[in-house]
Image 1: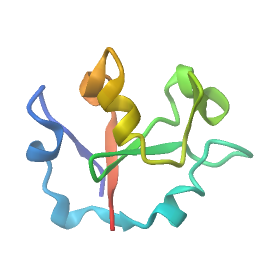
Image 2: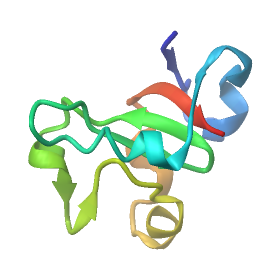
Image 3: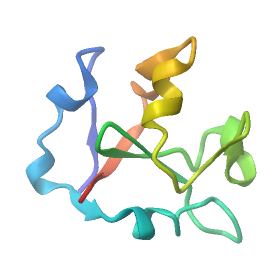
Length: 94
């Protein structure tokens, strides 16, 4: 059920979303990286697993929280979506 997003192409264009699990924003909020929960973030409709990324320890990174849609924030960040290229895509937003 997991997919890798490819080799630098636009992230959403390189994934077959038909087989991904769908999450509502409420469901996504449960993946906040706290109390043993996995840490997921959404970006442009896709859900990424950041659980094993050291910078996301305890479910936060530079003031951003796991379990949320970070589309607006990542679009404004200096690194942009390139930080997502090696993460596992675990789902999509309903």
